Length: 130
Image 1 (tube, rainbow, N blue to C red):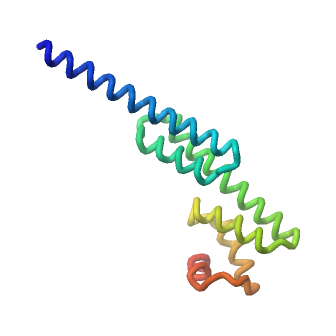
Image 2: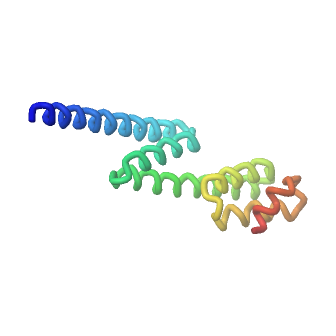
C-alpha cells in the first residue's frame, strides 16, 4: 500500500511539472508575438495547445491570435500593394498563406500579383490557383 502511495505522489509531481512546462511554452509564445515574432509565437502557442488539449485557454489563445495575425498580414499586404510595393505585398500574403493555406483573401491578394507577372515560381502560382 505504501508503495502505491509513493507511485501516486511521483505521478502527481510528473503531471505538475509537465503542466509547468506547458505553461512556460504558452508564455513564451505570447511573449514572442508581443515582440513581433509571429510565426515563432504561434508555433509555441500551438505546441502548448497540443500538449494540453484540455486547456481551453491555450486553444483559444492560439486560434484568436492566429486569426488576428493572419488578418494583420493580409492588411499589410493590401496596404503595400496599394502603396506600389508589390514585393512587400507578396511577402505578407505568403506569410498569411503559410499560417492559413486556405485563406481566400490571401490567395486572392497573391493571385492579383501573380496575374501581373510577379515572378512567382511555378509551384507558388499553382498553389495560389488551386
